[in-house]
Image 1: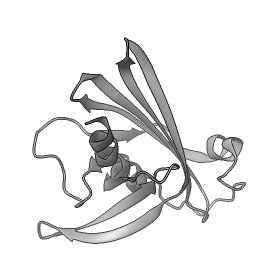
Image 2: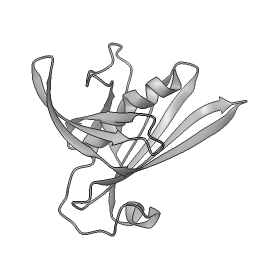
Image 3: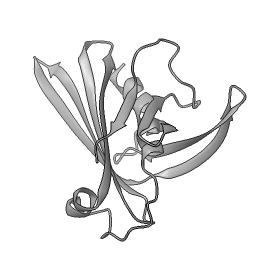
Image 4: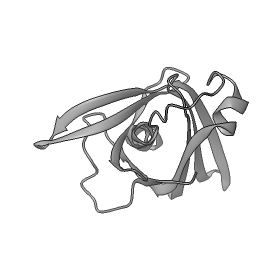
Amino acid sequence: MKTKLCLLAMPIIFAACGNKGQNATQPETTDSVTTDSTVYAGQVPAADGPGIKYQLACVNDSSKGFRLTTTYLQAEKGKDQVSESKGKYEVVKKTVAGKEGTFYKLPASDGSGETILKVVNDSTLRLVNSDFQEAASKLNYDLKLKK
C-alpha cells in the first residue's frame, strides 16, 4: 500500500519542478539540488500510519534534476522510514477527464516505479496515480512551494 501511495505522490512532485532558466550545477550531486532549487513539501495520508511526508527539490536549470525525500511516519516499529530518489524528471502534457494538464514524472532511483505530480498552480503540485488521475477521496495530496 505504501508503494501505491508513493507512486500516487510522485506526479505531483514533478509538476512543481518548473524550469526557471537559472544556472545550477548538475543535479546528481546533493549540493546542487539544495543550493539552487525550488522546494515543495507536504504530508499526505497513509493507509497504515499517520502519514507520509514528501519533500521535492528541483534544480532551477534545464537539467530537470530532482531529489525526492519520502518519510513514512512511524512505519517500522514506531520509527520513521526515509527513502530518497534522485534523477531527472519528465514534463508531460496530458488531457485527463476532458481537461489538459501539466504533469511531472519522477522515476524512482531503484527503478521500482515513478511518482507523478500534477501542476495545480504556481505554488502547488498534487500527487496523482499512474493514469494521471487525482484521488477519488477529498483527502489532501498536495505539495506546497517552500522556496
